[in-house]
Image (cartoon, rainbow, N blue to C red; front, top):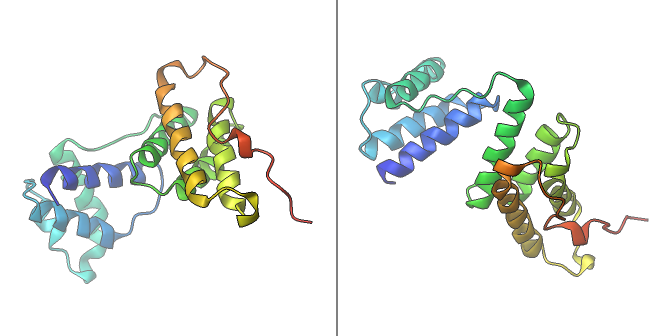
Length: 184
């Protein structure tokens, strides 16, 4: 792992925690250890990386201290809707860059974001991908890999429209599988 990889891992975990996702102390400590081994320097990093199992409750506070020292502390927007949109862009970015499985990512967007935002049109292609991936059956004549690829493309399209989220009425990448067969 390079120092850039380690810093990206710290940034990712910072966002995960800021968006309310649970991150165990063991992961925080491991991220600290990875960063230390990769040559990242921070006054509190060695303390975080060296925590023992009995000291795990100290990890969240030390992790935040390391983030602050490295200038990586992330605060989502105070407005709950803006925070949900920021989370959607973050998850879509992870789907697009391959750091998050498309099935897991589109499900998060569907269940944790689109629902809370009232299923906005901008998220429709990703929600359709989530439905397709969640209910995929071999009899559809399309492979799960193809559906995953469509989810990645839908994430990229969503990201490309970030600055103009209000513009365009283009169908999403997963639209042709929109009407999946129902079980009888």
